Image (cartoon, rainbow, N blue to C red; front, top):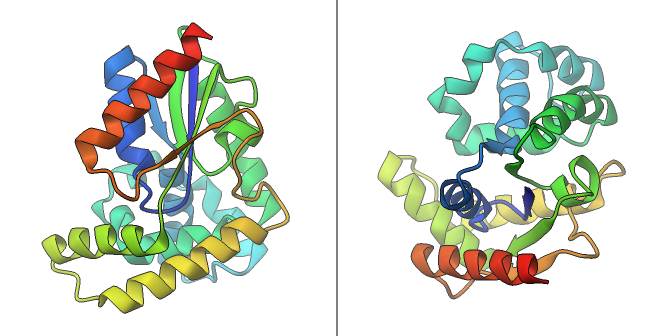
Length: 207
Protein backbone atom coordinates (compact mmCIF):
# COMPACT_ATOMS: atom_id res chain seq x y z
CA UNK A 1 0.00 0.00 0.00
CA UNK A 2 1.32 3.42 -0.97
CA UNK A 3 0.09 6.41 1.02
CA UNK A 4 0.82 9.83 -0.51
CA UNK A 5 0.69 12.84 1.81
CA UNK A 6 0.99 16.24 0.16
CA UNK A 7 0.57 19.77 1.37
CA UNK A 8 2.25 23.14 1.96
CA UNK A 9 4.95 23.94 4.50
CA UNK A 10 3.96 23.59 8.18
CA UNK A 11 0.56 22.07 7.39
CA UNK A 12 1.39 19.05 9.54
CA UNK A 13 1.92 16.64 6.65
CA UNK A 14 5.26 15.40 7.95
CA UNK A 15 3.92 14.62 11.40
CA UNK A 16 0.89 12.91 9.88
CA UNK A 17 3.00 10.89 7.43
CA UNK A 18 5.29 9.66 10.21
CA UNK A 19 2.29 8.66 12.32
CA UNK A 20 0.65 6.82 9.41
CA UNK A 21 3.90 4.98 8.69
CA UNK A 22 4.11 3.86 12.32
CA UNK A 23 0.42 2.92 12.44
CA UNK A 24 0.54 0.81 9.27
CA UNK A 25 4.14 -0.35 9.81
CA UNK A 26 5.37 1.09 6.54
CA UNK A 27 8.68 2.81 5.69
CA UNK A 28 8.47 6.61 5.48
CA UNK A 29 10.23 9.13 3.24
CA UNK A 30 10.15 12.88 3.80
CA UNK A 31 10.82 13.93 0.21
CA UNK A 32 11.12 17.56 1.23
CA UNK A 33 14.30 16.60 3.05
CA UNK A 34 15.87 15.69 -0.30
CA UNK A 35 15.20 19.19 -1.62
CA UNK A 36 16.47 20.71 1.61
CA UNK A 37 19.66 18.72 1.15
CA UNK A 38 20.03 20.04 -2.39
CA UNK A 39 19.50 23.59 -1.17
CA UNK A 40 21.96 23.09 1.67
CA UNK A 41 24.55 21.61 -0.71
CA UNK A 42 24.21 24.64 -3.01
CA UNK A 43 24.91 26.85 -0.01
CA UNK A 44 27.93 24.77 1.02
CA UNK A 45 29.21 24.90 -2.57
CA UNK A 46 28.90 28.67 -2.62
CA UNK A 47 26.43 28.53 -5.51
CA UNK A 48 23.05 30.10 -6.12
CA UNK A 49 19.79 28.18 -5.53
CA UNK A 50 18.27 30.20 -8.37
CA UNK A 51 20.88 28.98 -10.87
CA UNK A 52 19.72 25.75 -12.59
CA UNK A 53 23.29 24.50 -13.04
CA UNK A 54 24.30 25.07 -9.43
CA UNK A 55 21.12 23.41 -8.20
CA UNK A 56 21.50 20.38 -10.47
CA UNK A 57 25.12 19.87 -9.40
CA UNK A 58 23.96 19.84 -5.78
CA UNK A 59 21.64 16.84 -6.37
CA UNK A 60 24.74 14.65 -6.00
CA UNK A 61 24.95 15.55 -2.32
CA UNK A 62 26.44 12.88 -0.01
CA UNK A 63 24.01 10.66 1.91
CA UNK A 64 25.53 11.90 5.17
CA UNK A 65 24.03 15.33 4.50
CA UNK A 66 20.54 13.93 5.16
CA UNK A 67 21.41 13.68 8.86
CA UNK A 68 22.55 17.31 9.08
CA UNK A 69 20.34 19.04 11.68
CA UNK A 70 20.67 22.27 9.71
CA UNK A 71 18.27 20.80 7.12
CA UNK A 72 15.41 21.47 9.54
CA UNK A 73 16.18 25.17 9.74
CA UNK A 74 14.04 27.89 8.22
CA UNK A 75 16.94 28.88 5.96
CA UNK A 76 17.17 25.36 4.52
CA UNK A 77 13.43 25.36 3.89
CA UNK A 78 13.71 28.57 1.92
CA UNK A 79 16.58 27.18 -0.16
CA UNK A 80 14.60 23.99 -0.83
CA UNK A 81 11.68 26.00 -2.17
CA UNK A 82 14.02 27.83 -4.55
CA UNK A 83 15.89 24.81 -5.94
CA UNK A 84 12.67 22.84 -6.38
CA UNK A 85 11.49 25.12 -9.20
CA UNK A 86 14.19 23.73 -11.53
CA UNK A 87 12.87 20.87 -13.72
CA UNK A 88 16.31 19.23 -13.90
CA UNK A 89 16.48 19.03 -10.10
CA UNK A 90 13.05 17.42 -9.88
CA UNK A 91 13.98 14.94 -12.62
CA UNK A 92 17.22 14.04 -10.84
CA UNK A 93 15.37 13.26 -7.62
CA UNK A 94 12.38 11.54 -9.24
CA UNK A 95 13.80 8.01 -9.48
CA UNK A 96 15.02 8.13 -5.91
CA UNK A 97 11.52 8.89 -4.69
CA UNK A 98 9.73 6.56 -7.09
CA UNK A 99 11.93 3.59 -6.12
CA UNK A 100 11.09 4.19 -2.47
CA UNK A 101 7.37 4.37 -3.23
CA UNK A 102 7.15 1.11 -5.17
CA UNK A 103 9.23 -1.05 -2.84
CA UNK A 104 7.62 -4.37 -1.83
CA UNK A 105 5.00 -3.88 0.86
CA UNK A 106 4.44 -0.22 0.15
CA UNK A 107 5.46 3.03 1.78
CA UNK A 108 4.35 6.42 3.05
CA UNK A 109 5.78 9.48 1.34
CA UNK A 110 5.14 13.12 2.09
CA UNK A 111 5.94 16.12 -0.05
CA UNK A 112 4.28 18.43 -2.53
CA UNK A 113 3.85 16.27 -5.64
CA UNK A 114 3.62 12.70 -4.34
CA UNK A 115 0.01 12.08 -5.35
CA UNK A 116 0.31 13.94 -8.65
CA UNK A 117 3.79 13.00 -9.93
CA UNK A 118 5.79 10.57 -7.79
CA UNK A 119 3.04 8.06 -6.96
CA UNK A 120 -0.12 8.88 -8.93
CA UNK A 121 -1.08 5.22 -8.46
CA UNK A 122 -1.08 5.47 -4.64
CA UNK A 123 -3.99 3.68 -2.98
CA UNK A 124 -4.49 6.58 -0.58
CA UNK A 125 -3.79 10.25 -1.23
CA UNK A 126 -4.12 12.90 1.43
CA UNK A 127 -3.71 16.62 0.88
CA UNK A 128 -3.01 18.24 4.23
CA UNK A 129 -3.56 21.97 4.41
CA UNK A 130 -4.06 24.78 6.92
CA UNK A 131 -4.39 28.55 6.87
CA UNK A 132 -1.22 30.61 6.48
CA UNK A 133 -1.87 32.14 9.90
CA UNK A 134 -2.12 28.74 11.61
CA UNK A 135 0.97 27.45 9.84
CA UNK A 136 3.00 30.54 10.66
CA UNK A 137 2.09 30.26 14.34
CA UNK A 138 3.18 26.61 14.43
CA UNK A 139 6.47 27.35 12.72
CA UNK A 140 7.10 30.35 14.99
CA UNK A 141 6.61 28.17 18.09
CA UNK A 142 9.02 25.57 16.70
CA UNK A 143 11.61 28.23 15.98
CA UNK A 144 11.23 29.75 19.44
CA UNK A 145 12.08 26.37 20.94
CA UNK A 146 15.18 26.19 18.74
CA UNK A 147 16.18 29.72 19.68
CA UNK A 148 15.79 31.11 16.16
CA UNK A 149 14.94 34.85 16.46
CA UNK A 150 12.31 35.28 13.74
CA UNK A 151 9.10 37.24 14.19
CA UNK A 152 5.67 35.82 13.46
CA UNK A 153 5.21 38.41 10.69
CA UNK A 154 8.49 37.37 9.03
CA UNK A 155 7.51 33.71 9.07
CA UNK A 156 4.06 34.41 7.67
CA UNK A 157 5.53 36.49 4.84
CA UNK A 158 8.04 33.73 4.06
CA UNK A 159 5.30 31.09 3.96
CA UNK A 160 3.29 33.18 1.52
CA UNK A 161 6.35 33.50 -0.74
CA UNK A 162 6.99 29.75 -0.58
CA UNK A 163 3.35 28.95 -1.31
CA UNK A 164 3.45 31.21 -4.35
CA UNK A 165 6.63 29.58 -5.68
CA UNK A 166 5.33 26.07 -5.03
CA UNK A 167 1.92 26.64 -6.62
CA UNK A 168 3.07 28.54 -9.70
CA UNK A 169 6.20 26.62 -10.72
CA UNK A 170 5.95 25.12 -14.19
CA UNK A 171 7.13 21.66 -13.13
CA UNK A 172 5.03 19.66 -10.63
CA UNK A 173 3.26 22.55 -8.91
CA UNK A 174 1.81 22.10 -5.44
CA UNK A 175 -1.81 20.99 -5.83
CA UNK A 176 -4.13 18.30 -4.60
CA UNK A 177 -4.51 15.23 -6.81
CA UNK A 178 -8.01 14.89 -8.23
CA UNK A 179 -8.65 11.82 -6.08
CA UNK A 180 -6.97 13.17 -2.93
CA UNK A 181 -8.85 13.58 0.34
CA UNK A 182 -8.43 17.06 1.82
CA UNK A 183 -7.56 17.37 5.50
CA UNK A 184 -7.57 20.91 6.94
CA UNK A 185 -5.61 20.99 10.19
CA UNK A 186 -6.04 24.70 10.93
CA UNK A 187 -8.12 24.03 14.05
CA UNK A 188 -6.62 20.65 14.98
CA UNK A 189 -3.79 19.84 17.35
CA UNK A 190 -1.21 17.13 16.67
CA UNK A 191 -3.23 14.25 18.14
CA UNK A 192 -6.45 15.34 16.46
CA UNK A 193 -4.71 15.69 13.09
CA UNK A 194 -3.24 12.19 13.32
CA UNK A 195 -6.55 10.67 14.39
CA UNK A 196 -8.36 12.41 11.53
CA UNK A 197 -5.76 11.19 9.02
CA UNK A 198 -6.01 7.58 10.18
CA UNK A 199 -9.81 7.77 9.96
CA UNK A 200 -9.59 9.12 6.40
CA UNK A 201 -7.17 6.37 5.35
CA UNK A 202 -9.41 3.70 6.88
CA UNK A 203 -12.44 5.12 5.10
CA UNK A 204 -10.56 5.16 1.80
CA UNK A 205 -9.41 1.57 2.23
CA UNK A 206 -12.98 0.47 2.94
CA UNK A 207 -13.99 2.11 -0.29
